[in-house]
Image (tube, rainbow, N blue to C red; front, side, top):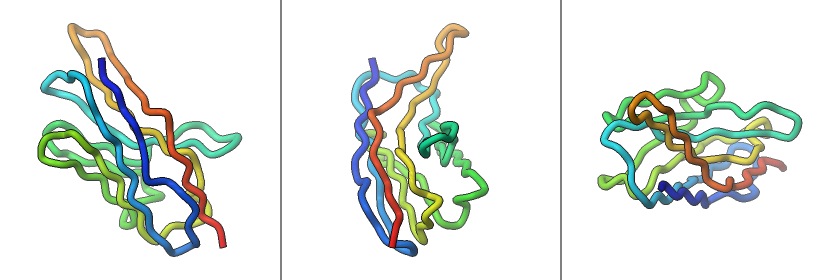
Length: 119
């Protein structure tokens, strides 16, 4: 019973910046991971960044130093600040929450938001 809604995507020139937002609602266990994934046409969905309930973060090598994942104090919103954008960052970006209950994995996804980087 987790609902995720992404926003903040759009068209931006190379070198520009966007901030994506993932609004969350519903119930989560105390231990979980939230992440941003992206999928370009004809490509596999890939992990961009993730943050755990203990505030550990991980990034794909392709975005290290350019993207930052963060969240508000109540975990109502998870952000992805994207700086120095490149054309290869063009994709649909999805928000995800993952957790395990009694040994069973759960994954919830948002609807996605389009990011296009083009001059």
